[in-house]
Length: 193
Image (cartoon, rainbow, N blue to C red; front, side, top):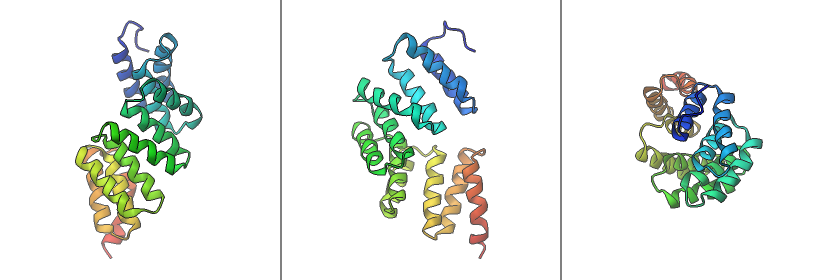
């Protein structure tokens, strides 16, 4: 447990590391402790929303996402976490609108472009989804999840060669990505046919 004397920035970074290692309880505890002292602390709200979103904890994410939009309506991340909440709730129209709000604030918000692509893919709008994923990749070439999402879209479209290429790119960025590894294994038999 980090000492309480650490700055808020250091504590939220510590929470990020804890979350990336799968230690969600500790990753959540850190921003909660900051928010007890300062309920409107936007970096702590963002970090809490990030961890809850990654964990798929919509029950706890909902009040955080609502509060984040209220506290920081001009912050692209506020709208991104609202979009993430709606996406996790299968409310794709609302997720799409919230992600577009994030893009309106920050056109280079790669994760929002990726989420737009995921929404559109789930709505059966594959060409628009592909464009959104490609935009996300142009904005940030180091996000393995976007390559994996684009690969899955190509796989669903019957383009196994492109899917395999995108899964491989995701693994180049993050060799521990299980979705990319599973996808690559799935495409191998199809590419060899």
